[in-house]
Amino acid sequence: MPIFSCFSHFKKPRYARRGCKVVTKSRSPLVKRQPTPKYPYSVPHGRPQHQSHTPLFEKLSAELRIMIYEFVFGESGRLLHIAPLENFSGFVKTIELLYSAPDFDFKGTTDMLIFKSIIPPIRWQAIRSISISTLLLAPNHYGGGQKYLRCPPEKWEKWSQGCKALAELPNLHKVYFDLILRNARDFGFEEWTYVDDNFFLQVLLPLKDIKASNFLVELNWTLRETVKDALGPINFEVNLSSKPYDEYFEYP
Image 1 (cartoon, rainbow, N blue to C red):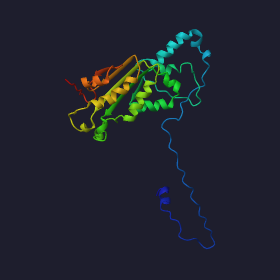
Image 2: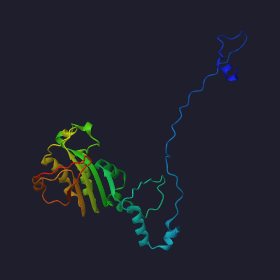
Image 3: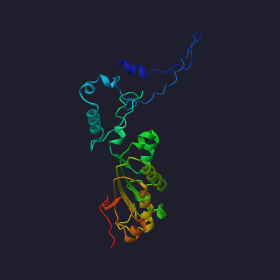
Image 4: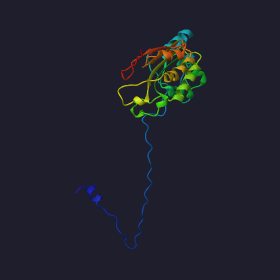
């Protein structure tokens, strides 16, 4: 019989023999192990050198170095993930380019407002290009049909706050809005019904305060003449675009 089988049938005696002292060992308390993080808490990095010690500093002029930094940070189509260092060290000459050169793409104004709240105001003011894609439901029917949503709708108070935040940017050059306007009653049905003029005005009027030389708004509805008259002169271009549902709507 294997040895380990013998120990498996061992039983503790029910009583101790006379003259023998039974010593019972207390069991050590269980120590709950902390879960091991999937990723390290901090990004390992070496000690940065002063910029004047780099070969790039010695061989290239300041103008050329700034052009290189701007190309790296602002190259079209490249996604950047910023991992801050714990001791806030590193080169700081290009920090402004990190905000002024790229195009910031947000899913809704809520994400943009969160981003604004965690960066210094001077960095927010340096942003020149922003893209926002979101879904807006008619306010008077906001409570219905949301269980059919494929993406969370924009909150109206955040929409107003987000437009005001964009209007504060002094150096804004490019703004792009990709908007889906829907009536919440229509979710779960194949046919989309009427969206009234007030809905369009609540969405588009706050955009008139935003100043940018390149300002484009894409909608899944064409603007009725009554909406255009109520809007008056606008500082952005409106295009009709097919959205994820492969549908768009035109008015005569």
